[in-house]
Length: 90
Image (tube, rainbow, N blue to C red):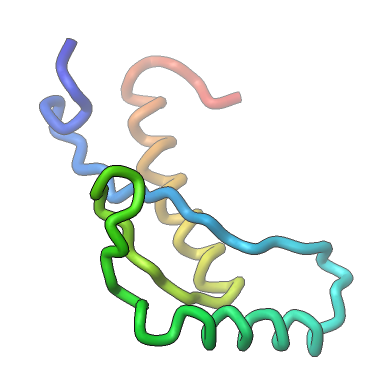
């Protein structure tokens, strides 16, 4: 069976480890957590920490809106592949 790449699909898909909370979280609390995460990862952004057997893991710190945009962009790719396969998402 051919891989998706062999079928012509360049998959810019990633796996994200992200922090989520209720939408009702106070903005000041969200900002404190975000700033603490940025501080904790300072100096490591873009680095490959040799995690998970040396796979290509990069540390990125992005805000909620950018993370949402990244997920939406990847969903477009997944949706196209599923539709072209003749299957359906829902």
